[in-house]
Image (cartoon, rainbow, N blue to C red):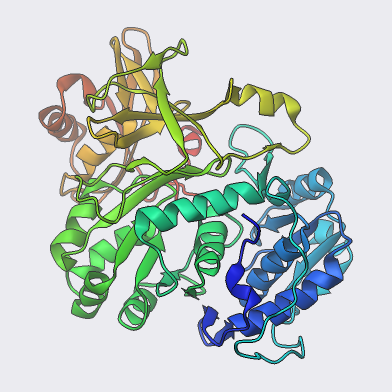
Length: 485
């Protein structure tokens, strides 16, 4: 890996980035990012006000070209969390779009407004562009802060090596080429939207069409045009599944895509089934984390049952371990263990947290905290987080994910989450949190009987709560700790 973006070296007229009606060719992107890279080359770290815009994309590419670690910042971030991130990462500069009003902790920093069209360079099709020499593979590329659900957010230091390894492994798994046009509307302060969704197409020499903000209309328009791939999270696919059956244009657009990819959380089986029925297309899933980038993926040529996250990517090793740390050899699709991974996709450290970094590893294996099963073909199925989704009830170890899928198959359930709570007799009892599909909501007994018939009696919910909506973060993940609060 000498260069992250070889396509930038030739000032091509191919479109690299398009955000609604604004676009940059590879030539324009090379000129804009190259000029900005020269200006920031002496900085220690730069914060990026990560709005879903061309400016954010140019800023991050410029930082990568300059070899300066970028710290993407969520524009919806709270004051105390922002203050922590700024004090922890100590950026010497902030990059933002010209009209952005920055909050206090960032406003106090020196600032450069990113202007994608003001580099003064021509496209020069076919000519070689002179860009700064890129640093080595182990150099820090981006520092992405975790959600902080179990304490203050930790800065995950991701090296250039991990970005290249993950994107090249996905090229293999998804047959991703320069001819692909990726469509998505994901935020750009997270691994999914930024590294996979922006840097992925640029490493391939392809194109990304960002919707600015997700909408089913935008997906139909872009996939009905040049779009070949769609990246989304389950909440997006849930909306697409609900509408595709009644919207022929959307169904046709989804059915014509080369690849539909869902990530960041498990996609319920009901949404897999609805999209397949309405469009003839299937959605593939992949599994990754901020600390590991991508670990597994369903391959483009794999026709396996929906609900798995596929096999380990090239170069990645994965294993399941029990609570004592013993490696589980079972590949029966039933035995639950924690996933541990190792490979070139892993982060370097948690910034300023050697204690947390050491705790996260079992030898050279990263402890993901995610629970999964593995089938005979080596495909993994995520059943939930160890801290919130593994329920120990009546001597059984139960994954919340399979109960949630069973609940979602009930016609009276629109959304579902499952957690455990202490029980003197069972150890933990299963609790269901339900958003009803209508005012005529199913009774707790009806839901318990439904789950018992679908799965097994010991997996039925003992307590049912009804909500108007489930609490979710910016990536659509259900915030289960917020349910009990």
